[in-house]
Every structure is written in C-alpha cells, then in structure tokens.
Image 1 (cartoon, rainbow, N blue to C red):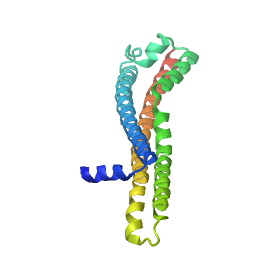
Image 2 (tube, rainbow, N blue to C red; image 1 turned 45 degrees about the vertical axis):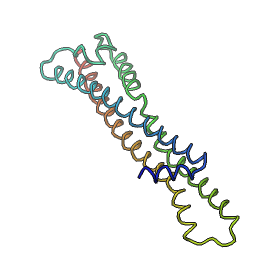
Image 3 (cartoon, one colour; image 1 turned 60 degrees about the vertical axis):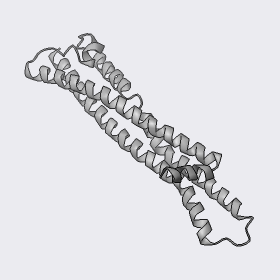
Image 4 (cartoon, helix red, strand yellow; image 1 turned 180 degrees about the horizontal axis):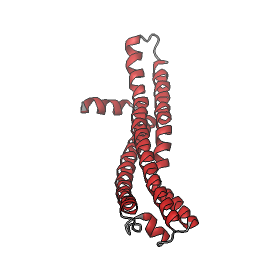
Length: 186
C-alpha cells in the first residue's frame, strides 16, 4: 500500500501533488471546523433547552447560562430580544459557510488535477509511435485519483455542513421560543 502511494507520488507532476496536498488540507479543515463547531453548538443547545424548559415549566426567568440572557441583560423588549437572536445565530454560524465553500470547490480542484494528469499523460505518449490501451489505462486511472480525492472531501464537507445547519436551526428555534415567551410575559 505504501509502496503504491510512493510510486504514485513519484510519477506525479508538481501540480497533481499540489492538488492532493490542497485537498488534504481541505479535509483537515473540514474535520476541524466540524468538530469544533459541533461541540460549541451542542453546548449552546443544552443551555438553551434547559432555559426554555425552566421558562415553560416553572414560569421563571431565563437561565443565566442562556446566550439570550447574556445578550439581553434580562430585558424583555421585543427589539432587543430580536437583535440578540440575530447576534447569537450569526456568532454560532461562523465556519459553516467554509464547509459549504469546500464542499462545492473540492470536486473542481480534484477535476483540475485529473485534467492536468491526463494532459501530462498524453504529452508523454506523443513521443511514442504506437501506444496501446495497456499503457494508456494506468496513466488515466492515476490521473483520476485527484477527482476521487476531491469527491471524497466534498462528501464530508457537505454532510458536516448539513448537520451543523440543522443544529443552528434547532438553536434558533429554542432562542425564538424563549424570546416569544419573554415578550408575552413582559
């Protein structure tokens, strides 16, 4: 396995290696953004859920751990609460657009690597008078590795993007419900 990878990298051009390094960096960024944002959003979700439960069950004030409480300073003004909702969701959504960008661009980066690899393969074959399928097929399959890598990265980026978007939506729902209750009480 390692010999195959080293052989592939040894036969690849600088552009193909650059494409694979870029896609590797994309993959690391995708996992880092996802894990970091998932942990922070889940913590916020837990606090907002507890706060909403205390508002609806015990008819008490917003939980001091709630982001809504911290932002509004206990105010029940509709305008202040709405501004807090927007601010909280904006802060929570940081990094999610990066996942979207990576999921949409990584297949194109991979495709670029494939096109360059195919062009280089054909340039090598131009000096031969007869080239059979047994020579062309391995070169083309090596070039397609970049496309596969781009699609691989895009799958994770898109999936993680969708998971985080759903978490932000849940958080927004909890915050809006609390704000509505506070406005109604106020």
